Image (cartoon, rainbow, N blue to C red; front, side, top):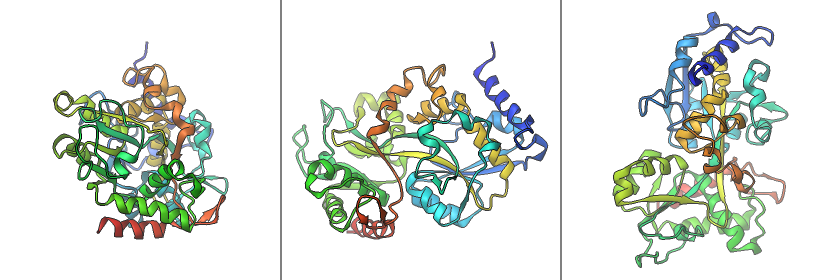
Amino acid sequence: MKSNKTIALLSIAGFLASSATGVVRAADMEGQLNIVAWAGYVERGDSDKAYDWVTGFEKETGCKVNVKTAATSDEMVTLMNQGGFDLVTASGDASLRLIAGKKVQPIDVTKIANWANVDKRLQDAPWNTVDGKHYGTPYQWGPNVLAYNTNVFKTAPTSWSVVFEEQNLPDGKSNKGRVQAYYGAIYIADAAVYLMTKKPELGIKNPYELNKDQYAAALDVVTKQRALVGRYWGDANVQVDDFKNEGVVASSSWPFQVNLLEADKAVMAKTPIASTIPAEGATGWADTTMLHAEAAHPNCAYAWLNHSLDAKVQGDVAAWFGSVPAVPAACKGNALLTDAGCDTNGMSNFDKIWFWRTPTGKCEAEGTCVPYSQWAKDYLAVQGK
């Protein structure tokens, strides 16, 4: 029986050897690949030897992988605007900006043998497909969860109000200074999701398509939240430390941080952490690996795009990050993820998640809505108060 690693390498070899669909050969590789990625998305075994989907790719293709970790979507956009990178693992609040700014190029899916394995719900998603052109390959997806300290919350919080409204928590102490909010302006959409239940009279149909009044209400929520927030989190690893050492007891978060905290026995003994999706629902992210418009190493980039959709790689990433694979076949037979992993990571929540996308000002439901440029300006002002 072939090992999972052997299967992954054979997948790369088959991709390189194929010429019928016009894919490149190993001899055509440029020897290098520069990627902008979220923390935990491109692992070579440095953190844990079991999680390595880079080393085999480098050996098989000769493409040395260099990774620049970005903490926010805004940072990703800035780095791609500056240039020097081939690929970026962009969330929906960055992807449309990169497409509109002509910083990424459409991909030729016929060069990507593993494209057929991608979840059909993600292949033509509105955050990575424009005018019928695919701008990148889906990578991973998941919800923005509510992480909480189980010493404070003996039962899971049922509402996002614990981070949005001043109140005493179950331990009898105020939430002021003990909660966090996400650094990026896209977080205003979290407030909009909250208001869809809290104030249905606003008529919010889509948290990324807000008319003037709806936007004003969401902005008011995050403005009032400012007095509660001890720190805005943008760096996932910093937030992990804040839960460990800085008294944070509730915050929006990613499964990645929750996984790291839950894996730390010392933390779980002192400040145990769990996560939930409250009754109002949640925003989330469906990330796309996108090709820079002026990529210096396009052949290595296409080889990585194909490699990233290998079922073994997809399952390993999902196990490490706490996400859901873009390739459904990855949910079975992966020792790291286990056959229960996709369900644990929220695969059944797809239709409950409002996936990040850039508010463009063009709205299906409202006709005219507030564009992201205004979101960014206003949220920066909120944080500065």
